[in-house]
Amino acid sequence: MARISTGNLSIGQLAARTGLAVSAIRYYETQGLVSPERNAGGQRRFLRSDIRRLSFVLIAQQFGFTISQIRAQFEALPDGRTPTKADWTKISRSFRAELDQRIDTLTNLRDKLDGCIGCGCLSLKSCALYNPKDKAGKLGAGPRYLMGDKP
Image 1 (tube, rainbow, N blue to C red):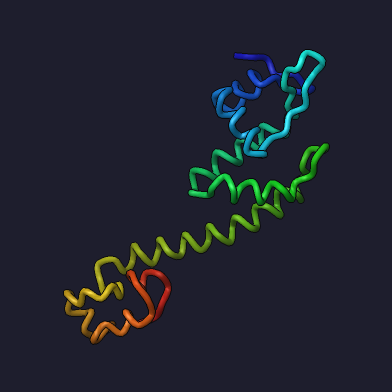
Image 2: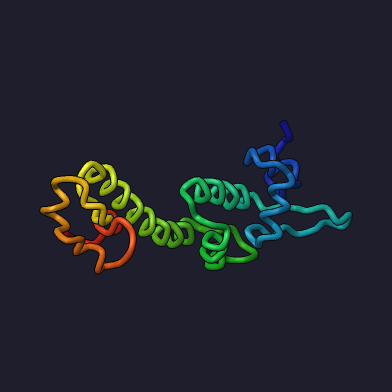
């Protein structure tokens, strides 16, 4: 494993620390998620804080956030200095709101999937009670009650 110094990191060192392929790090660079400097020989040199940035990218992508969404959040991070806890807290609050919404949606799905979901099929006995004559259809397409509409 590559030795990580206390100074700037080579792309190989960053890859070893994050578990990302060098090609993935280059891709994230083209997407504006990291901005390494170049040394006299033209080699990329990354800040140690880029370990956290790329780790955050991996986690955010696992939760379904797009590169564009992540980049938009990273625009609030400072250039030229290591982001502080306050910087990361600001980003996490934004992501937390979206994650809370997704958790609520998944909880609703889990709890109501076996009942009337307002899709308009009216095939369950409970649909006649919760969605008579497909009232949910007036609210729009899809499973309206799972999408947050109330019966």
